[in-house]
Image 1 (cartoon, rainbow, N blue to C red):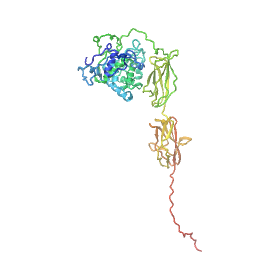
Image 2: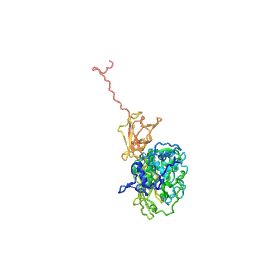
Image 3: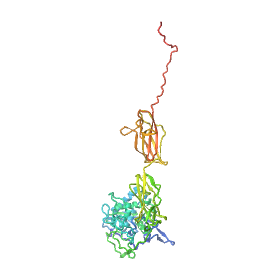
Length: 568
Protein backbone atom coordinates (compact mmCIF):
# COMPACT_ATOMS: atom_id res chain seq x y z
CA UNK A 1 0.00 0.00 0.00
CA UNK A 2 2.87 2.39 0.67
CA UNK A 3 3.59 2.45 -3.06
CA UNK A 4 0.29 4.14 -3.74
CA UNK A 5 -0.74 5.88 -0.53
CA UNK A 6 1.97 8.17 0.73
CA UNK A 7 2.01 9.80 4.12
CA UNK A 8 -0.48 12.54 4.74
CA UNK A 9 -0.41 15.78 6.69
CA UNK A 10 -3.11 16.26 9.24
CA UNK A 11 -5.60 19.05 9.63
CA UNK A 12 -4.84 19.28 13.34
CA UNK A 13 -1.16 19.91 12.63
CA UNK A 14 -1.60 21.86 9.40
CA UNK A 15 -2.88 25.17 10.68
CA UNK A 16 -3.16 28.18 8.44
CA UNK A 17 0.32 29.29 9.46
CA UNK A 18 1.73 25.93 8.40
CA UNK A 19 -0.15 26.16 5.10
CA UNK A 20 1.31 29.58 4.48
CA UNK A 21 4.79 28.33 5.30
CA UNK A 22 4.38 25.43 2.89
CA UNK A 23 3.41 27.79 0.10
CA UNK A 24 6.39 29.99 0.84
CA UNK A 25 8.73 27.01 0.83
CA UNK A 26 7.38 25.72 -2.44
CA UNK A 27 7.12 29.00 -4.34
CA UNK A 28 9.93 31.00 -2.84
CA UNK A 29 7.57 33.79 -1.81
CA UNK A 30 4.91 34.48 0.78
CA UNK A 31 1.54 32.91 0.20
CA UNK A 32 -1.20 35.35 -0.74
CA UNK A 33 -2.81 36.79 2.35
CA UNK A 34 0.20 36.19 4.58
CA UNK A 35 1.25 39.39 6.30
CA UNK A 36 3.86 40.44 8.81
CA UNK A 37 2.91 41.97 12.16
CA UNK A 38 4.72 44.85 13.88
CA UNK A 39 7.38 42.48 15.18
CA UNK A 40 8.12 40.91 11.82
CA UNK A 41 6.28 37.66 12.56
CA UNK A 42 4.21 36.11 9.79
CA UNK A 43 0.52 35.64 10.34
CA UNK A 44 -2.15 34.42 7.97
CA UNK A 45 -4.80 36.94 7.04
CA UNK A 46 -8.33 35.66 7.26
CA UNK A 47 -7.35 32.29 8.70
CA UNK A 48 -10.89 31.08 9.13
CA UNK A 49 -12.88 33.76 7.35
CA UNK A 50 -13.56 34.49 3.71
CA UNK A 51 -10.86 36.53 2.01
CA UNK A 52 -11.91 40.13 1.26
CA UNK A 53 -11.23 39.96 -2.49
CA UNK A 54 -13.22 36.78 -3.08
CA UNK A 55 -16.19 36.76 -5.42
CA UNK A 56 -18.90 35.24 -3.24
CA UNK A 57 -21.37 34.24 -5.96
CA UNK A 58 -22.22 31.16 -3.94
CA UNK A 59 -18.98 30.06 -5.66
CA UNK A 60 -18.42 26.78 -7.47
CA UNK A 61 -18.66 24.49 -4.46
CA UNK A 62 -20.98 26.39 -2.13
CA UNK A 63 -17.97 26.55 0.22
CA UNK A 64 -18.28 22.79 0.72
CA UNK A 65 -15.60 20.96 2.73
CA UNK A 66 -12.32 20.14 1.02
CA UNK A 67 -9.23 18.03 1.64
CA UNK A 68 -6.58 19.78 3.70
CA UNK A 69 -3.57 17.49 3.18
CA UNK A 70 -0.49 19.41 2.04
CA UNK A 71 2.19 18.18 -0.37
CA UNK A 72 5.62 17.09 0.87
CA UNK A 73 8.13 19.91 1.18
CA UNK A 74 10.65 18.08 -1.01
CA UNK A 75 10.28 18.69 -4.75
CA UNK A 76 8.81 15.83 -6.78
CA UNK A 77 10.93 13.84 -9.18
CA UNK A 78 9.57 14.63 -12.65
CA UNK A 79 10.34 11.19 -14.10
CA UNK A 80 9.95 8.47 -11.46
CA UNK A 81 9.11 4.86 -12.07
CA UNK A 82 5.39 4.22 -11.84
CA UNK A 83 5.55 0.42 -11.97
CA UNK A 84 2.91 -1.09 -9.71
CA UNK A 85 4.45 -2.80 -6.73
CA UNK A 86 7.72 -0.90 -6.97
CA UNK A 87 8.55 1.13 -3.84
CA UNK A 88 8.00 4.80 -4.60
CA UNK A 89 9.54 7.68 -2.70
CA UNK A 90 7.25 10.10 -0.88
CA UNK A 91 7.50 12.92 -3.43
CA UNK A 92 7.08 10.51 -6.32
CA UNK A 93 3.85 9.04 -4.92
CA UNK A 94 2.32 12.44 -4.18
CA UNK A 95 3.20 13.82 -7.61
CA UNK A 96 1.53 10.94 -9.44
CA UNK A 97 -1.80 11.81 -11.09
CA UNK A 98 -4.12 9.08 -12.46
CA UNK A 99 -3.77 8.86 -16.24
CA UNK A 100 -7.35 9.66 -17.27
CA UNK A 101 -7.63 12.49 -14.76
CA UNK A 102 -4.32 13.97 -15.91
CA UNK A 103 -5.46 13.74 -19.52
CA UNK A 104 -8.68 15.59 -18.66
CA UNK A 105 -6.75 18.47 -17.04
CA UNK A 106 -4.40 18.83 -19.99
CA UNK A 107 -7.19 18.70 -22.58
CA UNK A 108 -9.20 21.31 -20.70
CA UNK A 109 -6.20 23.65 -20.49
CA UNK A 110 -5.52 23.15 -24.22
CA UNK A 111 -9.13 24.07 -25.07
CA UNK A 112 -8.89 27.22 -22.92
CA UNK A 113 -5.65 28.22 -24.66
CA UNK A 114 -7.68 28.31 -27.86
CA UNK A 115 -10.99 29.76 -26.65
CA UNK A 116 -9.65 32.15 -23.99
CA UNK A 117 -5.95 32.69 -24.69
CA UNK A 118 -5.79 35.73 -22.43
CA UNK A 119 -6.62 33.59 -19.38
CA UNK A 120 -3.30 31.68 -19.45
CA UNK A 121 -4.77 28.74 -17.52
CA UNK A 122 -2.10 26.21 -16.43
CA UNK A 123 -3.33 22.63 -16.22
CA UNK A 124 -1.47 22.30 -12.92
CA UNK A 125 -4.04 24.66 -11.36
CA UNK A 126 -6.84 22.30 -12.37
CA UNK A 127 -4.81 19.44 -10.89
CA UNK A 128 -4.35 21.35 -7.63
CA UNK A 129 -8.07 22.04 -7.32
CA UNK A 130 -8.89 18.45 -8.28
CA UNK A 131 -6.55 17.23 -5.56
CA UNK A 132 -8.09 19.43 -2.89
CA UNK A 133 -11.69 18.85 -3.96
CA UNK A 134 -11.75 15.09 -4.54
CA UNK A 135 -8.24 13.65 -4.27
CA UNK A 136 -8.07 13.44 -8.09
CA UNK A 137 -11.45 11.68 -8.35
CA UNK A 138 -10.60 9.41 -5.40
CA UNK A 139 -7.25 8.41 -6.80
CA UNK A 140 -8.57 8.04 -10.35
CA UNK A 141 -11.53 5.74 -9.76
CA UNK A 142 -13.06 6.53 -13.16
CA UNK A 143 -14.06 4.48 -16.19
CA UNK A 144 -12.49 4.72 -19.65
CA UNK A 145 -14.74 7.69 -20.52
CA UNK A 146 -13.71 9.59 -17.40
CA UNK A 147 -16.92 9.09 -15.39
CA UNK A 148 -16.48 8.32 -11.69
CA UNK A 149 -17.24 4.71 -10.76
CA UNK A 150 -19.52 5.99 -8.00
CA UNK A 151 -20.82 9.48 -7.23
CA UNK A 152 -18.61 11.86 -5.30
CA UNK A 153 -20.88 13.98 -3.11
CA UNK A 154 -20.19 16.58 -0.47
CA UNK A 155 -22.44 16.86 2.60
CA UNK A 156 -25.90 18.32 2.16
CA UNK A 157 -25.79 22.11 2.44
CA UNK A 158 -28.55 22.44 5.03
CA UNK A 159 -27.09 25.30 7.08
CA UNK A 160 -26.01 23.02 9.93
CA UNK A 161 -22.29 23.66 9.93
CA UNK A 162 -22.37 24.43 6.21
CA UNK A 163 -23.94 26.94 3.86
CA UNK A 164 -27.71 26.79 3.41
CA UNK A 165 -28.52 26.03 -0.21
CA UNK A 166 -31.92 24.51 -0.83
CA UNK A 167 -32.44 22.12 -3.73
CA UNK A 168 -32.02 23.71 -7.17
CA UNK A 169 -31.88 20.66 -9.47
CA UNK A 170 -34.74 18.52 -8.10
CA UNK A 171 -32.11 15.98 -7.12
CA UNK A 172 -30.98 15.42 -10.72
CA UNK A 173 -27.25 15.53 -9.95
CA UNK A 174 -26.98 14.97 -6.20
CA UNK A 175 -30.04 12.77 -5.59
CA UNK A 176 -31.19 15.20 -2.90
CA UNK A 177 -34.55 16.89 -3.42
CA UNK A 178 -34.31 19.04 -0.30
CA UNK A 179 -30.81 20.54 -0.23
CA UNK A 180 -27.97 20.85 -2.74
CA UNK A 181 -24.71 18.92 -2.42
CA UNK A 182 -21.42 19.45 -4.26
CA UNK A 183 -21.08 16.87 -7.04
CA UNK A 184 -18.25 15.15 -8.90
CA UNK A 185 -14.46 15.31 -9.07
CA UNK A 186 -14.43 19.13 -9.16
CA UNK A 187 -17.28 19.45 -6.60
CA UNK A 188 -19.70 21.78 -8.39
CA UNK A 189 -22.98 22.53 -6.67
CA UNK A 190 -25.95 21.97 -9.02
CA UNK A 191 -26.90 25.66 -9.25
CA UNK A 192 -23.40 26.52 -10.48
CA UNK A 193 -23.19 23.52 -12.80
CA UNK A 194 -26.46 24.66 -14.42
CA UNK A 195 -24.59 27.52 -16.11
CA UNK A 196 -20.94 26.52 -15.82
CA UNK A 197 -21.26 22.91 -17.02
CA UNK A 198 -19.40 21.90 -20.19
CA UNK A 199 -19.15 18.83 -22.42
CA UNK A 200 -15.45 18.03 -22.28
CA UNK A 201 -15.44 14.57 -23.88
CA UNK A 202 -17.74 15.32 -26.82
CA UNK A 203 -20.50 12.85 -25.92
CA UNK A 204 -23.21 15.51 -26.02
CA UNK A 205 -23.79 15.42 -22.25
CA UNK A 206 -22.66 17.84 -19.54
CA UNK A 207 -22.04 15.54 -16.58
CA UNK A 208 -20.45 16.85 -13.35
CA UNK A 209 -19.44 13.26 -12.54
CA UNK A 210 -17.28 13.07 -15.67
CA UNK A 211 -13.74 14.33 -15.14
CA UNK A 212 -13.43 15.68 -18.71
CA UNK A 213 -16.66 17.65 -18.38
CA UNK A 214 -15.85 18.81 -14.86
CA UNK A 215 -12.26 19.84 -15.69
CA UNK A 216 -13.37 21.90 -18.69
CA UNK A 217 -16.14 23.52 -16.65
CA UNK A 218 -13.63 24.36 -13.91
CA UNK A 219 -11.31 25.88 -16.49
CA UNK A 220 -14.03 28.14 -17.89
CA UNK A 221 -15.12 29.01 -14.35
CA UNK A 222 -11.59 30.08 -13.41
CA UNK A 223 -11.20 32.05 -16.66
CA UNK A 224 -14.29 34.22 -16.32
CA UNK A 225 -14.30 37.94 -15.48
CA UNK A 226 -11.38 38.52 -17.84
CA UNK A 227 -8.92 37.11 -15.29
CA UNK A 228 -5.33 36.51 -16.41
CA UNK A 229 -4.06 33.57 -14.36
CA UNK A 230 -0.46 34.44 -15.09
CA UNK A 231 -0.98 37.36 -12.67
CA UNK A 232 -0.88 36.41 -8.99
CA UNK A 233 -3.73 38.73 -8.01
CA UNK A 234 -6.04 37.18 -10.60
CA UNK A 235 -5.12 33.58 -9.77
CA UNK A 236 -5.88 34.37 -6.12
CA UNK A 237 -9.28 35.80 -7.06
CA UNK A 238 -10.07 32.82 -9.27
CA UNK A 239 -9.22 30.27 -6.56
CA UNK A 240 -11.16 32.18 -3.91
CA UNK A 241 -14.15 32.33 -6.23
CA UNK A 242 -14.07 28.53 -6.28
CA UNK A 243 -14.16 28.25 -2.48
CA UNK A 244 -14.08 31.45 -0.45
CA UNK A 245 -11.53 30.63 2.23
CA UNK A 246 -7.97 31.78 2.89
CA UNK A 247 -7.10 28.27 4.07
CA UNK A 248 -8.43 26.90 0.79
CA UNK A 249 -6.38 29.40 -1.19
CA UNK A 250 -3.19 28.43 0.65
CA UNK A 251 -3.83 24.71 0.20
CA UNK A 252 -4.56 24.95 -3.53
CA UNK A 253 -1.52 27.14 -4.13
CA UNK A 254 0.63 24.62 -2.26
CA UNK A 255 -0.40 21.83 -4.63
CA UNK A 256 -0.20 24.13 -7.63
CA UNK A 257 3.44 24.99 -6.93
CA UNK A 258 4.18 21.35 -6.15
CA UNK A 259 2.74 20.06 -9.42
CA UNK A 260 4.55 22.75 -11.40
CA UNK A 261 7.84 21.25 -10.25
CA UNK A 262 7.03 17.87 -11.81
CA UNK A 263 4.33 15.23 -12.08
CA UNK A 264 3.90 11.84 -13.65
CA UNK A 265 1.07 9.60 -14.73
CA UNK A 266 -0.02 6.62 -12.65
CA UNK A 267 -2.62 3.97 -13.53
CA UNK A 268 -6.25 4.90 -12.84
CA UNK A 269 -7.34 3.90 -9.36
CA UNK A 270 -3.83 3.92 -7.87
CA UNK A 271 -3.45 7.59 -6.93
CA UNK A 272 -2.79 8.63 -3.35
CA UNK A 273 -5.89 9.44 -1.30
CA UNK A 274 -6.01 12.44 1.04
CA UNK A 275 -7.74 12.08 4.39
CA UNK A 276 -7.79 15.33 6.36
CA UNK A 277 -10.90 17.43 5.67
CA UNK A 278 -11.76 21.00 6.51
CA UNK A 279 -14.96 19.91 8.29
CA UNK A 280 -13.30 17.18 10.39
CA UNK A 281 -13.22 19.01 13.71
CA UNK A 282 -12.71 15.79 15.66
CA UNK A 283 -9.07 15.58 14.51
CA UNK A 284 -7.95 18.95 15.81
CA UNK A 285 -6.49 17.67 19.09
CA UNK A 286 -5.51 14.21 17.90
CA UNK A 287 -1.86 13.30 17.66
CA UNK A 288 -0.87 12.28 14.13
CA UNK A 289 0.70 9.01 15.31
CA UNK A 290 -2.60 7.78 16.78
CA UNK A 291 -4.80 8.56 13.80
CA UNK A 292 -5.92 5.75 11.57
CA UNK A 293 -6.06 5.88 7.80
CA UNK A 294 -9.49 5.40 6.25
CA UNK A 295 -10.00 2.69 3.69
CA UNK A 296 -8.59 3.73 0.28
CA UNK A 297 -12.01 3.30 -1.24
CA UNK A 298 -13.81 5.45 1.31
CA UNK A 299 -15.93 7.89 -0.72
CA UNK A 300 -16.11 11.58 -0.17
CA UNK A 301 -19.85 11.37 0.27
CA UNK A 302 -19.57 9.81 3.73
CA UNK A 303 -21.15 12.79 5.41
CA UNK A 304 -19.86 13.33 8.96
CA UNK A 305 -22.39 13.54 11.76
CA UNK A 306 -24.09 16.92 11.78
CA UNK A 307 -23.98 19.05 14.91
CA UNK A 308 -27.16 19.63 16.86
CA UNK A 309 -29.62 21.51 14.64
CA UNK A 310 -29.52 25.22 15.07
CA UNK A 311 -31.30 28.01 13.26
CA UNK A 312 -28.93 29.67 10.80
CA UNK A 313 -28.29 33.36 11.46
CA UNK A 314 -30.43 35.76 9.43
CA UNK A 315 -28.43 37.29 6.61
CA UNK A 316 -28.99 40.25 4.30
CA UNK A 317 -30.06 37.81 1.59
CA UNK A 318 -32.80 36.49 3.88
CA UNK A 319 -34.36 39.98 4.05
CA UNK A 320 -34.78 40.34 0.27
CA UNK A 321 -38.43 40.05 -0.77
CA UNK A 322 -38.12 40.89 -4.46
CA UNK A 323 -35.92 42.40 -7.15
CA UNK A 324 -36.95 45.50 -9.10
CA UNK A 325 -35.71 47.10 -12.29
CA UNK A 326 -33.59 50.14 -11.41
CA UNK A 327 -34.11 52.23 -14.55
CA UNK A 328 -32.66 50.03 -17.28
CA UNK A 329 -32.92 51.67 -20.70
CA UNK A 330 -33.86 49.87 -23.91
CA UNK A 331 -31.28 47.18 -24.65
CA UNK A 332 -30.38 47.17 -28.33
CA UNK A 333 -27.07 46.67 -30.11
CA UNK A 334 -25.83 45.92 -33.59
CA UNK A 335 -24.34 42.47 -34.17
CA UNK A 336 -20.68 42.42 -33.19
CA UNK A 337 -20.95 45.59 -31.12
CA UNK A 338 -21.20 46.30 -27.40
CA UNK A 339 -24.48 47.34 -25.84
CA UNK A 340 -24.24 50.96 -24.76
CA UNK A 341 -26.75 50.51 -21.91
CA UNK A 342 -26.37 48.27 -18.87
CA UNK A 343 -28.89 46.38 -16.76
CA UNK A 344 -29.58 47.75 -13.27
CA UNK A 345 -31.50 45.77 -10.64
CA UNK A 346 -32.41 46.74 -7.08
CA UNK A 347 -32.91 44.34 -4.16
CA UNK A 348 -35.70 45.36 -1.80
CA UNK A 349 -37.38 44.17 1.37
CA UNK A 350 -41.12 43.62 1.51
CA UNK A 351 -41.45 47.20 2.74
CA UNK A 352 -39.52 48.47 -0.28
CA UNK A 353 -36.27 49.22 1.55
CA UNK A 354 -32.99 48.74 -0.33
CA UNK A 355 -30.81 45.76 0.62
CA UNK A 356 -27.07 46.15 0.14
CA UNK A 357 -24.29 43.59 -0.03
CA UNK A 358 -26.33 40.76 -1.56
CA UNK A 359 -25.41 38.95 -4.75
CA UNK A 360 -27.56 39.22 -7.88
CA UNK A 361 -26.93 36.76 -10.69
CA UNK A 362 -27.60 37.84 -14.27
CA UNK A 363 -28.09 34.98 -16.75
CA UNK A 364 -28.41 35.31 -20.54
CA UNK A 365 -31.07 32.94 -21.87
CA UNK A 366 -32.37 32.32 -25.37
CA UNK A 367 -30.94 31.52 -28.79
CA UNK A 368 -28.11 34.04 -28.81
CA UNK A 369 -24.33 34.22 -28.79
CA UNK A 370 -24.35 37.49 -26.88
CA UNK A 371 -22.19 37.37 -23.75
CA UNK A 372 -21.11 39.59 -20.92
CA UNK A 373 -17.69 41.19 -21.19
CA UNK A 374 -15.21 38.35 -20.71
CA UNK A 375 -17.20 35.85 -22.76
CA UNK A 376 -19.49 34.38 -20.11
CA UNK A 377 -23.27 34.04 -20.17
CA UNK A 378 -23.59 34.46 -16.40
CA UNK A 379 -22.36 37.23 -14.13
CA UNK A 380 -22.93 37.92 -10.45
CA UNK A 381 -22.68 41.39 -8.89
CA UNK A 382 -23.09 42.66 -5.32
CA UNK A 383 -25.65 45.34 -4.62
CA UNK A 384 -24.35 48.72 -3.42
CA UNK A 385 -25.58 50.72 -0.44
CA UNK A 386 -28.67 51.68 -2.47
CA UNK A 387 -29.45 48.03 -3.14
CA UNK A 388 -28.52 48.34 -6.82
CA UNK A 389 -26.44 45.90 -8.83
CA UNK A 390 -25.30 46.87 -12.34
CA UNK A 391 -24.61 43.95 -14.69
CA UNK A 392 -21.41 43.94 -16.77
CA UNK A 393 -21.62 45.29 -20.30
CA UNK A 394 -23.26 43.03 -22.84
CA UNK A 395 -21.33 42.19 -26.01
CA UNK A 396 -23.49 41.25 -28.99
CA UNK A 397 -22.49 38.24 -31.06
CA UNK A 398 -23.41 37.56 -34.68
CA UNK A 399 -26.84 36.04 -34.05
CA UNK A 400 -29.58 38.62 -34.50
CA UNK A 401 -32.93 38.69 -32.74
CA UNK A 402 -34.32 38.89 -29.22
CA UNK A 403 -33.07 37.27 -26.04
CA UNK A 404 -33.56 37.64 -22.29
CA UNK A 405 -31.33 38.49 -19.35
CA UNK A 406 -32.76 37.01 -16.17
CA UNK A 407 -31.98 38.49 -12.76
CA UNK A 408 -32.05 36.27 -9.66
CA UNK A 409 -30.72 36.61 -6.16
CA UNK A 410 -28.05 34.11 -5.18
CA UNK A 411 -29.31 31.76 -2.48
CA UNK A 412 -33.01 32.72 -2.63
CA UNK A 413 -35.99 32.38 -4.90
CA UNK A 414 -37.85 35.70 -5.13
CA UNK A 415 -39.81 37.55 -7.79
CA UNK A 416 -37.43 39.24 -10.21
CA UNK A 417 -37.55 40.99 -13.56
CA UNK A 418 -36.56 39.63 -16.96
CA UNK A 419 -34.85 42.06 -19.32
CA UNK A 420 -35.54 41.87 -23.05
CA UNK A 421 -32.66 42.67 -25.37
CA UNK A 422 -32.31 42.79 -29.15
CA UNK A 423 -29.38 42.29 -31.51
CA UNK A 424 -29.90 43.98 -34.88
CA UNK A 425 -28.05 43.14 -38.11
CA UNK A 426 -24.81 44.86 -39.11
CA UNK A 427 -25.71 48.21 -40.71
CA UNK A 428 -24.20 51.16 -42.57
CA UNK A 429 -25.36 54.77 -42.67
CA UNK A 430 -23.12 55.94 -45.55
CA UNK A 431 -21.80 54.57 -48.84
CA UNK A 432 -19.20 56.09 -51.16
CA UNK A 433 -17.32 55.01 -54.27
CA UNK A 434 -13.64 54.40 -53.78
CA UNK A 435 -12.89 55.95 -57.21
CA UNK A 436 -14.18 59.00 -59.09
CA UNK A 437 -13.43 57.60 -62.55
CA UNK A 438 -16.38 57.98 -64.94
CA UNK A 439 -18.04 54.70 -65.84
CA UNK A 440 -18.50 54.55 -69.62
CA UNK A 441 -18.95 51.86 -72.25
CA UNK A 442 -19.83 51.44 -75.91
CA UNK A 443 -22.95 49.53 -77.01
CA UNK A 444 -22.35 45.77 -76.81
CA UNK A 445 -19.10 46.27 -74.90
CA UNK A 446 -17.97 46.00 -71.28
CA UNK A 447 -17.12 48.64 -68.69
CA UNK A 448 -13.40 48.93 -68.09
CA UNK A 449 -13.76 49.74 -64.36
CA UNK A 450 -15.60 47.69 -61.72
CA UNK A 451 -17.74 49.53 -59.18
CA UNK A 452 -16.26 49.45 -55.64
CA UNK A 453 -17.93 51.12 -52.65
CA UNK A 454 -17.06 51.56 -48.96
CA UNK A 455 -19.63 51.40 -46.15
CA UNK A 456 -19.32 53.25 -42.85
CA UNK A 457 -21.42 53.61 -39.71
CA UNK A 458 -21.00 56.74 -37.62
CA UNK A 459 -17.79 57.33 -39.55
CA UNK A 460 -16.30 53.93 -38.71
CA UNK A 461 -15.80 50.99 -41.06
CA UNK A 462 -18.99 48.95 -41.37
CA UNK A 463 -18.13 45.30 -41.95
CA UNK A 464 -20.43 42.33 -42.57
CA UNK A 465 -23.20 44.65 -43.81
CA UNK A 466 -25.72 43.10 -46.22
CA UNK A 467 -26.25 45.01 -49.48
CA UNK A 468 -28.19 44.87 -52.75
CA UNK A 469 -27.21 46.34 -56.15
CA UNK A 470 -29.92 47.01 -58.77
CA UNK A 471 -29.86 48.64 -62.19
CA UNK A 472 -32.96 50.82 -61.86
CA UNK A 473 -35.18 52.57 -64.41
CA UNK A 474 -34.78 56.10 -63.07
CA UNK A 475 -34.08 58.16 -59.97
CA UNK A 476 -37.81 58.14 -59.23
CA UNK A 477 -38.48 54.57 -60.28
CA UNK A 478 -36.39 52.03 -58.39
CA UNK A 479 -37.78 49.03 -60.23
CA UNK A 480 -35.33 46.91 -62.18
CA UNK A 481 -34.48 48.15 -65.67
CA UNK A 482 -35.04 45.74 -68.55
CA UNK A 483 -32.46 47.27 -70.85
CA UNK A 484 -29.04 48.87 -70.68
CA UNK A 485 -26.07 47.71 -68.56
CA UNK A 486 -26.16 44.31 -66.86
CA UNK A 487 -24.14 41.80 -64.83
CA UNK A 488 -23.68 38.17 -65.83
CA UNK A 489 -24.63 35.13 -63.78
CA UNK A 490 -22.58 31.91 -63.71
CA UNK A 491 -24.23 30.80 -66.92
CA UNK A 492 -23.39 34.06 -68.68
CA UNK A 493 -26.99 35.27 -68.67
CA UNK A 494 -27.83 38.93 -68.05
CA UNK A 495 -28.92 39.87 -64.49
CA UNK A 496 -29.68 43.38 -63.29
CA UNK A 497 -30.09 42.78 -59.53
CA UNK A 498 -27.45 41.37 -57.16
CA UNK A 499 -28.46 40.20 -53.67
CA UNK A 500 -26.54 38.57 -50.80
CA UNK A 501 -23.74 41.09 -51.09
CA UNK A 502 -21.78 41.78 -47.89
CA UNK A 503 -19.05 44.23 -46.97
CA UNK A 504 -15.67 42.78 -46.04
CA UNK A 505 -13.55 43.55 -42.98
CA UNK A 506 -12.60 46.90 -44.54
CA UNK A 507 -16.21 47.79 -45.28
CA UNK A 508 -15.72 47.26 -49.03
CA UNK A 509 -17.87 45.70 -51.73
CA UNK A 510 -16.45 45.24 -55.21
CA UNK A 511 -19.19 44.49 -57.74
CA UNK A 512 -18.70 42.11 -60.69
CA UNK A 513 -17.91 43.44 -64.16
CA UNK A 514 -20.67 45.31 -65.99
CA UNK A 515 -21.62 44.85 -69.63
CA UNK A 516 -23.74 46.92 -72.05
CA UNK A 517 -26.38 45.88 -74.54
CA UNK A 518 -27.06 47.88 -77.71
CA UNK A 519 -29.06 50.59 -75.92
CA UNK A 520 -27.32 53.92 -75.52
CA UNK A 521 -27.93 56.54 -72.85
CA UNK A 522 -27.34 57.27 -69.17
CA UNK A 523 -28.31 54.52 -66.73
CA UNK A 524 -28.42 54.26 -62.93
CA UNK A 525 -27.02 51.61 -60.57
CA UNK A 526 -28.41 51.83 -57.04
CA UNK A 527 -26.69 50.14 -54.04
CA UNK A 528 -28.55 49.89 -50.72
CA UNK A 529 -27.47 48.40 -47.36
CA UNK A 530 -29.04 47.30 -44.10
CA UNK A 531 -29.33 50.46 -42.07
CA UNK A 532 -30.55 52.61 -44.95
CA UNK A 533 -27.35 53.71 -46.66
CA UNK A 534 -27.93 54.27 -50.39
CA UNK A 535 -25.66 55.22 -53.28
CA UNK A 536 -26.69 55.83 -56.91
CA UNK A 537 -24.00 55.53 -59.58
CA UNK A 538 -24.26 56.83 -63.18
CA UNK A 539 -23.36 54.55 -66.10
CA UNK A 540 -23.00 55.97 -69.61
CA UNK A 541 -23.34 53.94 -72.80
CA UNK A 542 -22.53 55.84 -75.99
CA UNK A 543 -21.36 55.05 -79.48
CA UNK A 544 -17.72 55.67 -80.15
CA UNK A 545 -17.07 59.21 -81.32
CA UNK A 546 -15.68 58.80 -84.89
CA UNK A 547 -12.49 60.68 -85.42
CA UNK A 548 -12.72 62.97 -88.52
CA UNK A 549 -10.48 61.56 -91.28
CA UNK A 550 -8.46 64.07 -93.29
CA UNK A 551 -9.86 64.86 -96.84
CA UNK A 552 -7.66 63.74 -99.75
CA UNK A 553 -6.03 66.74 -101.46
CA UNK A 554 -7.29 67.45 -104.98
CA UNK A 555 -5.64 69.79 -107.46
CA UNK A 556 -7.81 71.49 -110.10
CA UNK A 557 -6.34 72.61 -113.38
CA UNK A 558 -6.02 76.39 -113.49
CA UNK A 559 -7.42 76.32 -117.01
CA UNK A 560 -10.32 74.10 -116.23
CA UNK A 561 -13.58 75.40 -117.50
CA UNK A 562 -17.05 74.09 -118.04
CA UNK A 563 -17.28 71.81 -120.96
CA UNK A 564 -18.87 73.24 -124.00
CA UNK A 565 -21.96 71.87 -125.47
CA UNK A 566 -22.07 70.48 -128.97
CA UNK A 567 -21.59 72.92 -131.80
CA UNK A 568 -24.46 74.13 -133.86
